[in-house]
Image (tube, rainbow over all chains, first blue to last red; front, side, top):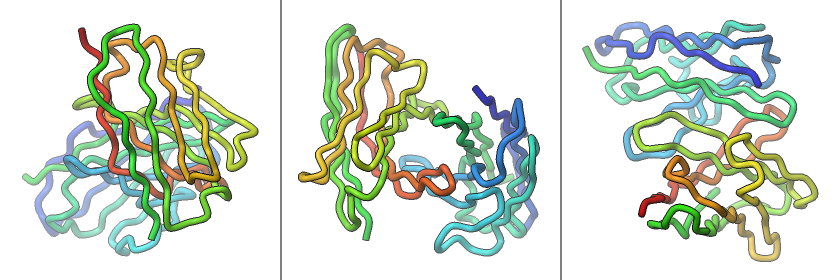
Amino acid sequence: EIVLTQSPGTLSLSPGERATLSCRASQSVSSSYLAWYQQKPGQAPRLLIYGASSRATGIPDRFSGSGSGTDFTLTISRLEPEDFAVYYCQQYSSSLYTFGQGTKLEIK
Amino acid sequence: QVQLVESGGGVVQPGRSLRLSCAASGFTFSGYGMHWVRQAPGKGLEWVALIWYDGSNKYYGDSVKGRFTISRDNSKNTLYLQMNSLRAGDTAVYYCARDWEAVGTFDYWGQGTLVTVSS
């Protein structure tokens, strides 16, 4: 099973700042099968990024994904108040799906 | 628009069973694989199970294998999760989610149903 480790656990930033979230895999992940989700309190997760770097429908272009192999990054270029939430990375391999433990993005 | 509505959650004693349902609308249900994903209170996301669009193949996470069964009724546009031998560690919000097979992701999610396993 591929384990995903996200860092940092908590990121404290101010609106307007740039956020960089990391997701590291225990073994190589196909870029086609790496995704990022946003989850706000009391809500279901929402797909942000698929295929490591493609934005899902309706996702603002301040969100971008990059990376390959075992290291992936979600970047939010300029934080808006509605971006403060928990972010999860997720991978698919051999009919199994795993999530990272999440990064909480909080207002500083 | 795509809608997924879970039901069937509640409080159940350890060792008992419960069946969850997920009613789908707004898309051709029989053309998509479907998942269950759960989230324990205050914790992260855990994938539970996948069923192919036609029910021909099913896959499970290690923590539920042998105890949970995923199924579907394409004539009713409904996904199910039969949960047996429930444990305290199964306490979670259970989400159904649509499979985006080409990229191995979950593109639409329901709002979830809470299952509490407690005596």
